[in-house]
Image (cartoon, rainbow over the protein chains, first blue to last red):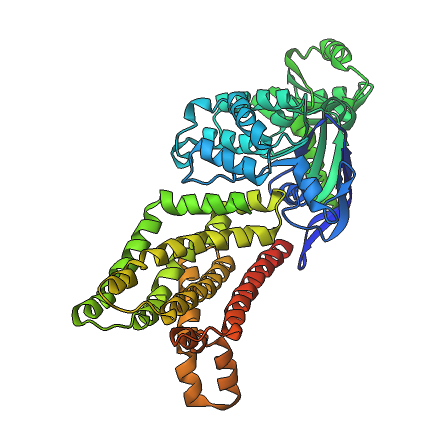
Length: 315
Length: 234
């Protein structure tokens, strides 16, 4: 549905987006993840035709954004970071205006707008001025605006930013529901959000793609080691040495000491080896009791940070 | 284009903006018109000429928000990413301002009607004067729309339009002082020298074409400014 090829955007000396390529299939929800300033918004602005790219092509449903912008724009509903609402209009006037702007058929307009208002739950506020609405409701009006004209593709730039937790959950649910009928690209710098909603994730950092995969594969594939923390009573050096001798252990580090002879260690081992049993027997043989043993599975958060910081070290 | 036109017209008339400006305009023109009524001067065209100057005060306030506001509040994204080209956005907005201006002008029809009712002659000069006035307004509005596209700050937009319109207003008298090449350039921008013909009752093709093309050029420049910014912004 959306093909992005070798997309590059430069502003003078600064390269905001560097040679990005990916595709989004019909009906897919794609998460666009990256730290602030990674180039997420720039990429979205290019896909929607708000700004042109320096190099590379964007095709939506086979139409190129530079060659036939109108065809592309017809197929896209865009919610920018700041919802593009007119503060001095009422909700209903605003949505009517957007419908006219997007050339929605006169006969369908009324029913379409009331359907959308019901979907994003702003029907009760239809006659209020947008400037008097709360941030969450403004965001919903922004989302409603993107839905007007029933575009096949929705591009949502940080749709939950600045909302309270309850609203965030509602908006996520809504996006999931919309994903049944629309192709969606969703950007965020918050990981749980993307992993909760999206089927596939593009991690972008410093204008380049760092990883593309499903959330499951990302957490499986990228953690090259499994980690645990163990709190053990015993002299530090002999405990460390004993741990190092266990098969599969790659790395041990004492992180904190509770008192003179109880220390917490972080142990990293090969991914496919479970060292908890051998660790227990090794410590039992030496007579050092294990006070606490906890496995640290790598969350998406860790992976995200890992990818982003690795990139930093390379660059 | 139609959607943008109606939206802008509504936003002028739903806010106090249009009423305050129209009120101000009518107040000022009434003050000018009063002595004519009192002392029985027959020719309304002199009032029209002064009204042309009042426009310089009123039009920039009317146009300052037209594009700057969209940029400031991020609604520009909505307009540009919707299936409408930039020219129709600009023209739609221009026409909306023109509509307000036209309402304003139409209200002043009362003055000559009163004069004619009390014995003044209804002349072609009067009609010509109004045609000129409507064309003059178009050029002022185009300049104002252009100024509004340059910045997201409405105060700066209004200052740019005031300065440009005053230069255009003074161009004629300055050019007679300096002479030479500078005078030629200034004459090109001298909107008023063309306006005189209308007020004398001469309806020539060339001033009409001049006003219309002046308007078109400024609207075209506005489109270029918006286009150019798309290429350079994040």
